[in-house]
Length: 120
Image 1 (cartoon, rainbow, N blue to C red):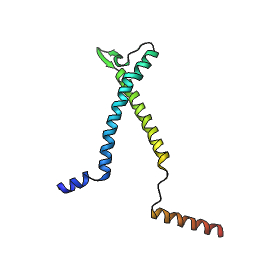
Image 2: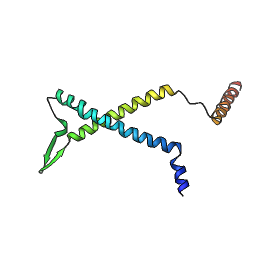
Image 3: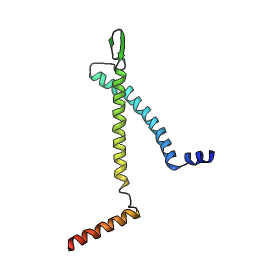
Image 4: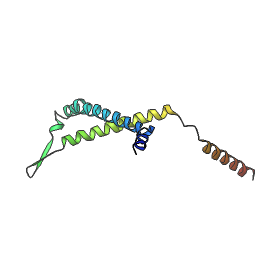
């Protein structure tokens, strides 16, 4: 059982996933710091000196803090935008993957069938 666990953990995609999660967590901290320290203070200043982290309202004596939620939404949007741009750039540089042998064979069959249709 230990050998199977070791085999599972050492597979390439598991290690790639682990690296991705670690890098993603670090990237999330960077974006959170950017939003909390730079973006939201700028937005608050533009809107008249509002501090989003302290925004809240009262319902039946209970304080509902929605400012932190707004900051989390901005975090999410920035992370999503950053990943979209990163993946888009990676897709442009990667190019189309080479077809597998079975895909090449299917393309050849498709081309032969098209040629036969034109002859008929």
